[in-house]
Amino acid sequence: MPDLDDASAAAGTVAAPGGVGLVAPRDFVHARPFTFQSGQSLPGFTIRYETYGQLNPARDNAILICHALSGDHHCAGRHSPDDRKPGWWDNLIGPGRAVDTNRFCVISSNCLGGCVGSTGPSSLDPATGRPYGISFPFVTIRDMVRAQKLLLDHLGVSALHAVIGGSMGGMQVLQWGIEYPGFVRRLLAMATTSREGAQAIAFNEVGRQAIMQDPAWNQGEYPKDGGPRTGLAIARMMAHITYVSDASMDRKFGRRKKAEANGDAYTFDIQFEVESYLRHQGQSFINRFDANSYLYITRALDQFDLAQAYGSLEAAFAPVQAETLVVGFTSDWLFPPEQNRTIALALLRCGKRATYAELETDLGHDSFLLESEDLYAIVRGFLEREATVEVDFNI
Image (tube, helix red, strand yellow):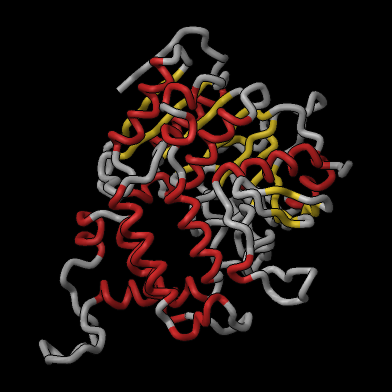
């Protein structure tokens, strides 16, 4: 069994005030067969992860962070002093921050099916020596959670103080409460849903078609540095629009034109700042994400439907023992507040300890990733308060 305390100490050797400092990813190799929900299997898999903070003697102060579609294991700190950007939730995690690494051992992993160190379609199939491509097993949210549990067993975690995530990460949070009810004490799901609706599925399908209609996709077989870069960039551009709001886009860009734009010339070159921004989003994405992983993970999102999987939402939540907080954001039109509120209401109908909080913001779906003192206060209060015994529901 690895010494998670030593790993955590090595990962945070240079700590800025409030931050976890320099961190290093590690790999967990599960060398035994793993069967997916689809019935397909792999001879083993690798999960890349990072840790911040230290486990207590009881090894039960761990908090698991679950990432969204385009995220990964690197949610806090920096990998080198030259890194321009810290981890994607660095504003939330660190000594004295809302997820306080002086109190908790935080663990974050790249999901099964991903492309940032964990086994996914771009990984080599040991049977052929070539990337799996679209022969990779179809992955579900439940598969991701089961792989995470194997990681935590490997690290010697005896119980989770909490599981936290937004968007796809929030789906994993809910699945954790259902799958391992005696292992996790608190669930904190943000900007999420218990089932993808038709509009969200439609957006994902447009993105997949942009990838698969790119000739360079080649039925999922392409070189590591090649593939459907144009299609993947378009998929990312369109998806990014769903993560923000009209108000935030208008405030940031409006109808401002690039300085070099030739007036109102009738051309298809970039003229508006928002066009330049979206193209930058697309180009930066293709340098860090695999197109086949995008296909697989968006399909996992589409298939997530707790009510259908368990007969009803109440039946799905029947095993849940954890205290749950669901956070919705008023301007989120991808997974709107009503979908988040539905989760809390279903938990309450089952007699579970559930709270719903709704934050007013005009930043859209990605509000859970952005700086917000109100959100920090809600997260800190939920994690650090004594466990409640009564059912509590606040709107």
